[in-house]
Image (cartoon, rainbow, N blue to C red):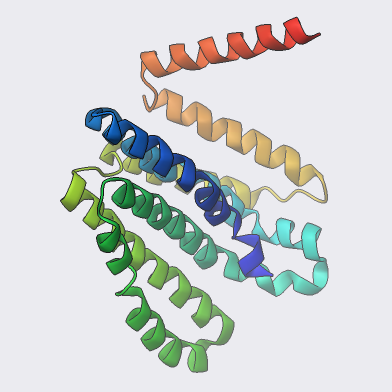
Length: 236
């Protein structure tokens, strides 16, 4: 139950990575290497920016598990945080692998998985007998984080692309109050959805207040909204 609860970020990254791979390959093939780098940097930036939203999910884990699975699965909520760490790490690894493959370093991307296996085996042999399910969840999160660190380091070393440090710092800063607000604001039943929407809007506002989005990005977003609105009105 806890693993299924935390699987969404990884699935999103897996569905997005083929598009990233195709777009980067096309840009590199056309000789626009700098544009491909911007695509890669923005994709990794998106993973880093998702951390506060994972923090909201971790803080609301008890309510989510109860809504989806019922009260009988309440113990699964305490396993949510390490599995969410694993999900974000897997998303970073997936995006990094797509970047490396598009840049012609598929073998490097494959080698990035090698350190994960010994860490996982050693961790499971030590932690599971002593700590049970929580030990397995923590080892899963740790092994995934090791894989993500290696993949990100390889991406930086081979193609000079990495998540923006400023975005990572903003994500960490925003994650702390986001988690505390989600954990300290109990909401019964479907009211949880309203809480998540409000906290998500708060995260977006915090990113804007901290200067995450440039004026050019905000202008492009506004143009996209206007364009989609005109398209809908024309269809009507």
